[in-house]
Amino acid sequence: MAGRCSRRHGEKYITDGLVKVNGKIVTELGTKVDPEKDRVEIKGKPVVFKQALVYIALNKPRGYVTSCSQPGDKIVLDLLNISGRVYPVGRLDKDSTGLLLLTNDGELHHRLSHPSFDHEKEYEVTVANPITDKALLNMEQGMPILGTKTRHAEIKRISPKRFRIVLKEGKNRQIRRMVGKTGNSVTRLKRIRIANIKLGGLATGKWRYLTEKEKDTLLKS
Image (cartoon, rainbow, N blue to C red):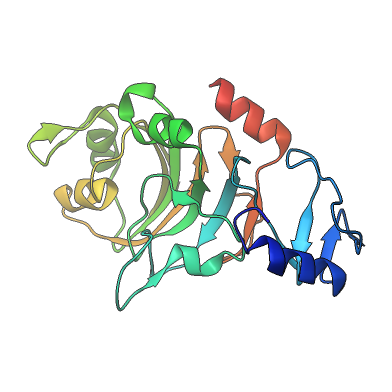
């Protein structure tokens, strides 16, 4: 049963009325389902078929590590309640929040993670002290960090201590390092968009599947 249990246990789940297909309990053994179209649940939890590709948007809270395994830390996978395995695309550091994509599509994972594909990532940044126009311009034009110069970024001021920045790369703790170069420091960092996928009103710690339109646009890009 999609790798979730043995055939014998699967048949018992069915006869016990614990399996739903498209919201309806099924009790007939051998019921056919289409993994591309039908929604199957066991004990109220959705079953993700091995061959089905899954695309999830998560609003990562502060304090969670973007990893599949991190002893002693809370990980983003703890926030999901799906039966299949998915992997985070890129990273958000432990103290950062906002949009994180997770998928079992290896090709998409590579394309979104590699800077050569030029996918935009947009962040809202709050800093400790008012940031000058000159500092924002320096970050926008590119700065030397980690032995190389950052690529051109798009920056829009929101208030004396807040701005939005759009990157087409993702160096380790890049925004925090860039702000640090200006003599300031980041107090809050929230990702609000990856390519065409927006965080929108998704509550902190909650997740959703991408819509068909979002998925199609993302895959075409």
